[in-house]
Length: 96
Image (cartoon, rainbow, N blue to C red; front, side, top):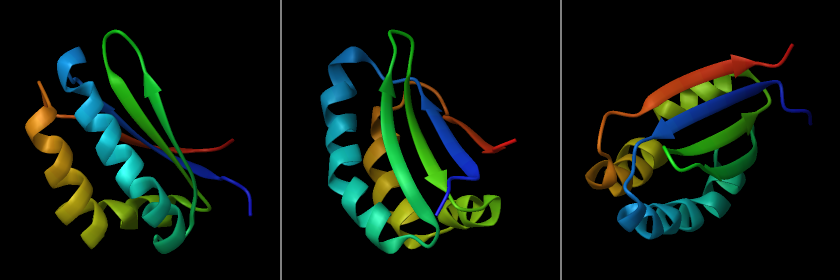
């Protein structure tokens, strides 16, 4: 399958909290790729100003559905929320 959509979640997380954020990423990367319909890739991107998780999907519909999944709402979101310095920026892109 080919990535045709990306879900980008950009988070303001202090440098001191980044190891905890990386743990959430590592803990759920495998289950995300194995269990979430249409999930193809997941990468953690780190910059001085923020942290991004870039999720590759086979369709924009599957990217949107992940945001409503039990894994996202009950595991990933709840694990990351205490680490945020601001609300995350969540965007879905379609590959041209």
